[in-house]
Image 1 (cartoon, rainbow, N blue to C red):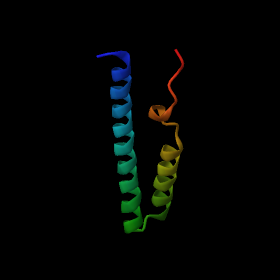
Image 2: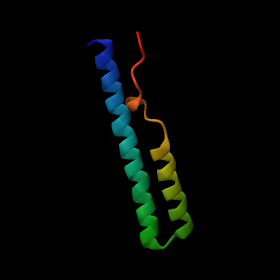
Image 3: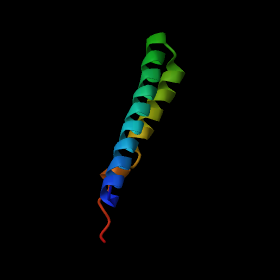
Image 4: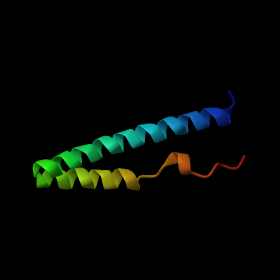
Length: 65
């Protein structure tokens, strides 16, 4: 396995891990919405927004050699 393949594998793992975590937090927000817990809902949705706004290393342009 060469360096590019390692980078691709790490990027795939990071992307899957981040998407799974965002889905989990989104689930907490939706559950809080359904239960009428307004403050918790607001906090969870804000957390989702922060997670989605974070830099995504797998979208970075490759460095010049």
